[in-house]
Length: 294
Ligand SMILES: NC(=O)c1ccc[n+]([C@@H]2O[C@H](COP(=O)([O-])OP(=O)(O)OC[C@H]3O[C@@H](n4cnc5c(N)ncnc54)[C@H](OP(=O)(O)O)[C@@H]3O)[C@@H](O)[C@H]2O)c1
Image (tube, rainbow, N blue to C red):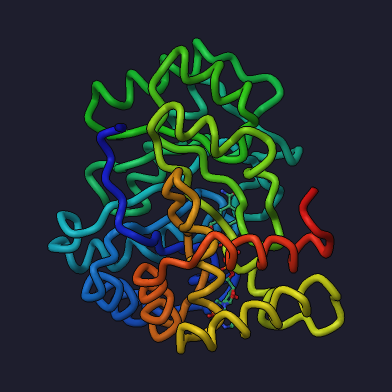
């Protein structure tokens, strides 16, 4: 097994700042403390969140409360160049996984987050021009300097993962997984994680919230109805059923939650107590696909 140990759910930070809840520093602080009280120590960032502003907002709390440094485990990502007035030097929306850019980006994230070390750094998206030897050199340098502890990737195909992992050990592939997005079950990603004994992490476990809100999409209506039916059986709510469905897979997928509301995170955590049956799992799969399995 890889030697990173995640909490049962990861707290996503993408929607805490200007891309969502627009938290103040004291709201971030309360949010972080509440997650820690629930036993959730993992926080998932990316340099780009909030158009490169969310890491710094989160970092304001860490600078004020250095005690948090030893309590939290932080993932951040690099490699996407977004067009935004916050980074006027970027002229083209593009990916960059050159050695210099990875090192610069990790050091910048460290500074903004107010941390001494990033626990896990991910290449955010596969860069068509990536050179695995160069990425490995960047990772080795960051590790040797004590700036980053573990490395991984996000949204990588199985061949891209295999290639980079042959140069430098990767501890996760963070991919989109939900009843609305099931590619990882078919494209080899989860098989690969099992084979390498690493845990996949799953972004947008609720389809970015669409599963609760969209009332016109037939697939979503089917998924919601089936989840409600199963939730009744467990005397619970559909968020827990949707997460229990993801976590049933033997690769031990860890959902990366997107809520900014601690009550919703507390409810999500209870899903770890639910073990649905194989039949319930397939019932939900069929509700999602709209067709019987072969
Ligand atoms: N690696 C990547 O490429 C990538 C891409 C996207 C995201 N991510 C990571 O994954 C995390 C999660 O992604 P996501 O935000 O799309 O996840 P998500 O959990 O599928 O969606 C979050 C949205 O759903 C709403 N929601 C959550 N629980 C709810 C409930 N019980 N009832 C009604 N609405 C609910 C939230 O609103 P409230 O805040 O109001 O609860 C929020 O708007 C991000 O924060 C980020 O860290 C990574």
